[in-house]
Image 1: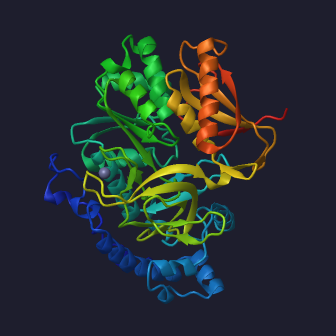
Image 2: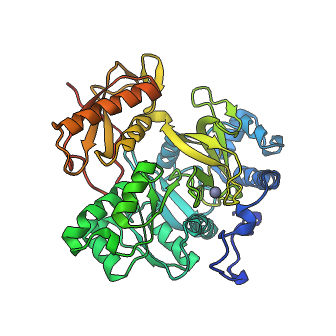
Length: 467
Ligand SMILES: [Zn+2]
């Protein structure tokens, strides 16, 4: 039986206090909490959560036993380094051993009311269960992010992510209902035509999707609706799932296509909710908005050693749920490599900010230099509108060691012929910029506009094509 001390919900903004559209934060107390108070709250909650795991989760009981660490041994947030990591591989094995949710499940089945699944691109999907309280906390995280984008009651928000099982699908729509906005679960399953008609018919004021899909909708709008997207009246364009919305050149493209400057990025690990990072209006890195519910720490991805969350620090982030009931994770390795910003933000939120700079599992080593494919693609993003920003690394065989030049396939912008002088000048420009910024030589293969698939799913950063 789940311990009752996890059921209190002080993390949630109490709607009984009103839903004043003029307040700048969804949850003013939690989003502007001074760092020392947040750390004290995290430690207090962590201690309860660790005891909860020992009492209720077979996976973590075994981890405590094998490592010889007891929950009582963790007296500071740094002490958490005594506890072993949890990996995606372990979650899969755990799920195989004890379906449906795995040995880490800590709440009885009759307390679980929601499921999501992480995408199966790198193996079998992992299913997550959520208790009613987990659902409420997830909605709270959605509200904090969307409120920061300027979404208010009365806004009509179209969800253009895939709805089926995806953590940014149905859970986003439930969160939008909690915020008081008009939640529109259009879903990428409707394809661009269907989503565009819903945007028009319901006079949508906001769209949340992958950046690829937002760009594709804008491309298709004249053909499907007979008007450019900028005439549809959509005020906020936001989402994530791949790089794009954080890049100034892509933001400008969105601004032209949709006729609005309010373009925002979002990031999270699908296994880690309610952990979220989201832009504020300043758009200088994404704030960690849920530090009161999820402890986020930084490690050296090679050695696993802890790194301090300090300005400019880089590393893989790991998460520990502080009050998750159904499927809690402890020191879970997300694989996302980020760079931290800790200087105070003009918006007043106190959660540290970050930029994702890579994935630990797709890092390439080019003559001893570590290169993240996303870093290459992000440089291509600086060459809009001659390029669309879509690009992928082409490898002859799987593996991390790559001989230079690295082959990089880049899609030309609308109306740009890959053989034209303009395109070749761009090719030289991208190669030069990558060499200057990342000390890596590349061989750019230009492909025509439309060659990359236009779907709601994220574009693969690396493809294997044997010669
Ligand atoms: Zn801010």
